[in-house]
Structures are given as C-alpha cells and as structure tokens.
Length: 202
Image (cartoon, rainbow, N blue to C red; front, side, top):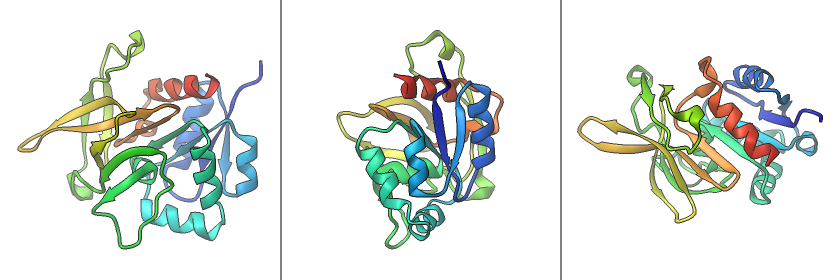
C-alpha cells in the first residue's frame, strides 16, 4: 500500500520540521504553496509561525479559499501553534481584520501565554485512549495561543495549569481536524504526527 500524501502549508513557519516528522512516521510529505497542489494530498498540516503572515501570504498565493474549502469538506488537518489560530472559527486578541481558515468550533486567544521571552516547555498529559499516550508529551510553547471556548463537537485532548489563571486548553480535536498550542515538530517525539496520520488514513 502506498504511503498517504500529507501536505504542509509551506508559506512561512516550521515547514521543514513538519516535513521531516511526516517522513519519519511513514507519510509522503509534500510542501504546499498553490491551490492545485492540494489535489495531491490526503491531509494537511498548518505549521507554527506567524498566523497573520500566513493568512496574508495565502491570499497572495491564491491558496486561501482552496485550503478553507478542503478543511470544510472534511480533509484531515493538523494545526500547531499559529496553525491552531488559523483553524479557529473565532479569535480573541487577533490583529485587525485577521482572517482564519476556520474548521474548529473554538475561540482562541492569540499569544495567550505572552511574548517570545515568555516561551516555556512543559510535560503535557494527553487524554487520548491509546497506550502510546500513557506518558506525557514534552511540549514547547512559543508565543502560544490557548483555547478559551469550544463548541459541543470539540474534544479536549490536553490542558496545562497556568499559575494564577487555572487550567487552559492546549490541544483539541473535532472530527478529522486537530490542533495544539505548542510545537510537536521541534521535538523527537513523533506520537502526535502518528496520531494525525491515523486520522488521515482513517
């Protein structure tokens, strides 16, 4: 059986790291910059980076509507950090006029954990019914968002305790669409990429 083709939206951000992780878990990774290239993939990753820049570049490269349409019609999609922002149906603290692709019935607060100097690492326990997730995921948070509200069809996969604030949601899934506040692509832990590949292969 041939490897599933999984694209990484290659406009800005951690594109190379995601492509490498996908190759490590047995996918056929493809860098996506044009609408026509979406026809060749079974799933898509929206990488970490700068969400406003990615949205603007998606308009410039005339790929914005194609990505939004594929997500809306059920393409498995995984957003990390800025990718979570881009998948959110609603934003708080977004830039004026900021667009998102949508696909997750969630409200996301952009840069919720603070600025670059507030970046941190933490071990995050996932509530996924899979022995592979018995041990926590070591997560790297860089100018990370968090989820403030979610619709009934959204499952919480993980949360972290924020001092003085309480628990904040950092990983969610709604059907074939998932997102994390952090950057799994910068670690050697491939469990979330494998989990996403399972969504792609169904």
